Image (cartoon, rainbow, N blue to C red; front, side):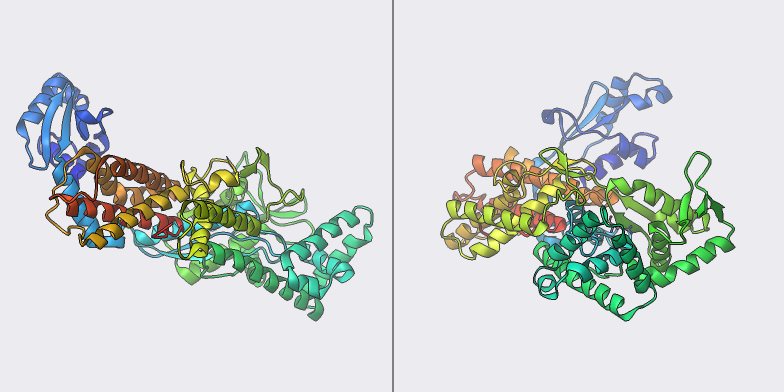
Length: 561
Ligand code: ARG
């Protein structure tokens, strides 16, 4: 039952305004005692040439509905108070019938490639790549819930002049055993050493260039090493993805587009978009903007050209209805250029390309940087989070079975949730102790609330009482507060998918958890009276929605913790 929609219908029967307009005008009264919805009548005052309070009184006098306990005018507003029992009953029935499909809706359809994670091989995955991974993963799940078919693409940074340097470095100082033991760490060390020694030994840079040339020309040794570096790096990354529970539909990275760039350059030429500027081949971006470089003065093609090729290829391959790039805000200009050039090429589908930017993770207020060696190794962060979680579980629930699994779900879930609860674009500081707390605005708090709901249901089952499936008879304010949040879930999903903003779901889950904990503190759920089965239904519905909200964030919900 959609109460807001009913308000719209009732108002529409009385005033001459389009329903969308009415829908947009409806407010939530600041004070809950004033009701649940309010329609402001002053917008009509001019047209009707009556004072707003009179209009509100007239509207209120002419409408009635069983779903509202009161409809009355207060000053220039028509206020609607939802009948508590009706809302609670309708919502519980809805959630319990649809179970984890509650909130599913059809807002669109078709393929939506999501370019996400995309770390660079032979380098540690950064916090930025972690953000891209978890934000992209959550957006994918949310898009799926509203009807789209997400395609998660890991556009690996697996090609470029740096691999010439890496091969040269490996030839000097590398050793197969070490790379096998700890690929990324060791490859990264060779690379860092190369840069350091190249400062005093320019010959190294030449060697790097030669090896890159060999790689481009298909020299067997160069190609073999490069492939090997890619493979072992990817295995390392996949360990992290496994911890996070994230999978990909494609690993077509930069190298995949090596042979697909020249056709794009030719196409740009044919369409008359390319011209020379200071030795480079560029496309104009408009009068006050710098031109976009397509081919550098030394003849090498660049990041943008590859992304143009990738975008065209993906359109052919997936015939997408939207395409998302979950990449840090510092690359905003790049994606403006990508969209603009595609548009100039005559591709109107470029309007359906969205850069989904996000802010930085800092530590102690400082920016993290791979180049300055100021890196956080993600495996380590996840391991630390899991052991912190385990410590807390051992204190709170030492007899818990399956401690390792639960510690994993809580520790990793905490890191993921912490990342997603902030508006994407906000920068935030990373403090592991805070992330893994069971109280406050954390993932473990939501997980713990869900486990508490599950534990109530287990106790009830032992007593032989089951949650009601119908005939709900709750009308107290605590239950109403929970049910109102539950009723909001479908709208929350719609907003989160529309704005590509997982934090909307994370914040929602925190609010729902808080409301439920108030319910738990104020109501004796397991008292054997004629409402017990309905109260259990509320507990079950809350657990269903919390679990589903966490799932959409990519966080597991253990039943016990
Ligand atoms: N590998 C890049 C980096 O680490 C991110 C790639 C983003 N995706 C894209 N299609 N440009 O900065």
